[in-house]
Length: 250
Ligand code: ARG
Image (cartoon, rainbow, N blue to C red):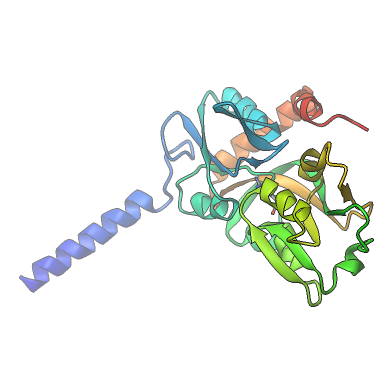
């Protein structure tokens, strides 16, 4: 009896391993005909809610990629720090969330070619004594949980970090004086401070970054298709026109 149970368990385990060994079908997808994208749609102009839709640069680029691959795009809006786990577990085919390529993240996921560049900026209240990143020492700094801003802020001497899950909560906290400064990506910073005369973005951009699409490690089938689609969309000007629709050049 025991033996049979053990054999059964081994078989079940074996089947389980086969079924989720790579977790994807021959097209590199978790579900036939669909491209499941996980994002955190609290990050205008890259991904945000407009009425009942998720719009923004990433959403439109993903849609253009899905169209090229003749797939239906399904967007799942979750916390930013859950995007990589959903890609590694195979719940999502791609993670696209204004996500910066970092060496650390590369240990868990593969990245497509980059589709946009960005930088981290500091936002303070008008009249603040903080003039640059040096001035953040010993201050209360607001960041979005699990972002590169969070990682950089963790290195600031004697700073106290307040971590928020949504982009606009950062700005609220700053306006309300709960934090002294916020570290966030440049374009969301511009978007969130627009029309807010009590807030200003410091000139110093202290880290340059590249955004790319996260894929399950080893899913080269999908990575190749996505990179090919991205290159075509760069060449025919689609990416530029999507970006300039959301980001007005200064
Ligand atoms: N670029 C930063 C990072 O990769 C922040 C991204 C936040 N994205 C979002 N959709 N909330 O960590």
